[in-house]
Structures are given as structure tokens and as C-alpha cells.
Length: 293
Length: 158
Image 1 (cartoon, rainbow over the protein chains, first blue to last red):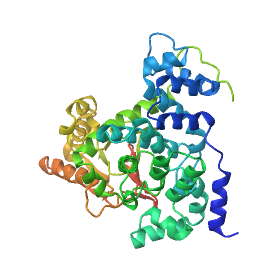
Image 2: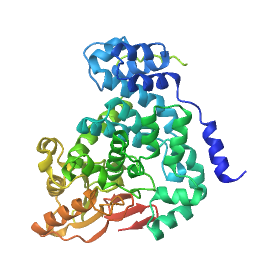
Image 3: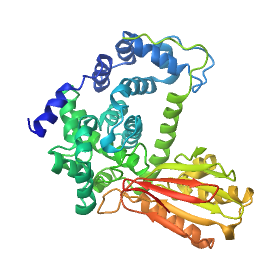
């Protein structure tokens, strides 16, 4: 079997996103959804409910009373934060493994993904052109293709890096030239296979090159800006570093300036530190036992 | 013993066992200072050039910006007995995304601001490794002032 076929075949072996995550994405993508729909979606997933309650009761939030139900959690922290928690927890397994081809230690890709997710939510708010929770999820999954392409990048690492250094191509272009696929194309295939909403498929497939789309797409623009920002600020970057193209047309399209990138950068850092602290702070009081699913 | 200097963070030490380390410098800049006589080392990892875009955040965390982070780093080193005239200053970071228009040029502006601050204060950069599109890690050993720079191409002294 040639390598291209092998890579495509491997896409088929990636386990699906957990049920709750898939349902949540559908709920978030539907403008008619309500808080009750979200509670309803999470309620039956005991493991995730236990984890959300554990995180809510962690010392980090410093709440004066104990959160014992999802409704409570939504009231205290807000729907957006709870959704972000649930999606972040759901992707930990998938994204936390070492990605040696990209020179990423365990946890680094997840860290980058969560940073881009938080940044995408910030940019969605700034532009008022995309749903914040959808942007968060799109950001969280934007690099999912790396999980599959990693082994092949590792095999051809020397050739890929030589191309980047000597020919001035981006890391993604080098992936495509050497392996036949880039991580954004593979990510797009995975997103299709998972039956993610079309906007989200597009934002994963074109996050490095929004200009590939005509007409442009707001969610793609948001994820592109978020990824560029997190790469610049070194939030979970690997050996591919900053060797990716940034599209200035996205800035002019939304009437953004350098200072907007900087101001949003400050806010992204605050958000990233908040979430990092949350996931590293031990819970206060007795810990709820996670129910295994 | 490693003290990790996070993004928008700085540390100084006169403990000979201390190593100050900062990872994943992209467009951000790492400033390492060392006084060979007082054996004081310091490392700053700032993310943006000017505090004017967010004075509140700068007050809470001066290390976020060049114009507030650099003075904070030097002041903290002076408090441990370092003297300006003896300080060896080395700099790394300021990478850029591939962007022909140079709009996403936070790395470059970070570096220009640093040069401006140093020029105003009569501080010379002894060594530097800036620009390009790579990620950098810096490690400063406070006992001997040895600074190592790690990139995808390997590790070397700076």
C-alpha cells in the first residue's frame, strides 16, 4: 500500500469523538438551543458531569458553597465556561499524547489546542461575526490532523525541515510536498468523518490558508487569527515553530490593526493562565470520584 | 534546580545552584542578564512591546511588556547586588510568522522596542539570536552565567 493510501486508511482508525461532545457541538451549532438543552446533553454523561463538578469545586474558583449539580455549575460559572470545560476535558485523551514528529512533548498539543480555542472565542467576540462556543470548539480541534500525520512527519522529518529552511516554504506546504497531505487537509477529512458542522470542517481544513476560500468564511478567519496569535506567543509550539503563513487580508477584511492583535493577545494570556491553573489546581475538600463510562 | 520563567514572567537569583529556564520563545523575547562579580542572574520573557495598550495589566504584571518588564528585571537584579556596568546582556527570540506584508510583526516590534530601551539607558547587547521563524528555549546557569540556546537545530552556548 502506498503512503497516501496508508494515511487515508489511518484517518478511518481514529476513534470518534465521545457522544456527549458530538451532541454538544450540534447543540452549540444550533442558534435555537437553550441552557436547558446543554444541561440535558451533559446530564447523562456521568463521567463528564463528575469531572465538571470536580473542576468547579476546585480551589481555583474559590466558591463559597459546594456545587452539586450541573444547573448549579451553569449558574455559578456561566454556560460558556462550563461548555469550555466539557469540551477541553473531552479532548484531553485525543490531544495529550506526545507528537514526536512535531517535537511536542506530552500535553503540548493539547495546551496549544486549548490556547487556540480560548483565542478563537476572544476573536469571535471581538469581530462579533462568529458564535463564541463554536469558535472555541473549532479552535480546540483545528490541529486534529497532526495526531494522524505525526508518525509520517517523524519519518520524513529531515526532508521536511530541509525544505522549510532552504526553499522558504511553510511547514504545512512541506508536509504536503513530501507526504502528499498537510495536517489541515487530514484534519478536514477527520472532521468530515466525524460529521462536524460544515463551518467547523472548513475552519479545520483551511486554518492556515483562509484565502483558499472564496467567499471568505468568518469562522475560518477567527481560527486563523487565533492560531497565528498562539504561535506568535509560543503557546504550545513545536519544532514547526512559527513556520506558517499569516494572511494579512484577514486583518483588513475585519478592519483589525496590530494593536488589536496585541490587546487580544493580553486577554488570551489571561484566559490561558486561568485554564492552566484550573487543570493543575488540586480540588478543594473531598474529591468526587469520577464514574468511569 | 530549575526555575521556569513562564511567558510574561521574570526571575532573578544569586543562588549558584539555580538555573533559570524559559521555553517556547516565539515572537516573545527572552532577556538574560548576568553579573559575573555578584554572581547574579536574571531572565525575562516578555510578550509585547508597549504597556500603553493595557496599563492595568502592566501594573499587575510588568513582565508582559518590554517597557515595564526590562526595568523590573534590572531593578530586581540590582536588589541582589548586581551593578549595571558589569551586567552581561544577551537576547533571543523575536520570531516571525511567514507574512510578506509584515503585518503580524510583533516579533520585530518587540525587538525594536528593546533596542530603543537599551539605547536610552546605555546598555549594550553582548550577544543575540533573534528573528527567523523558529521556537527557542533559553537556559541560564546562575553559577557561571552560561546561557544555552536550544532550537530545532540543537543546543549551543549564546
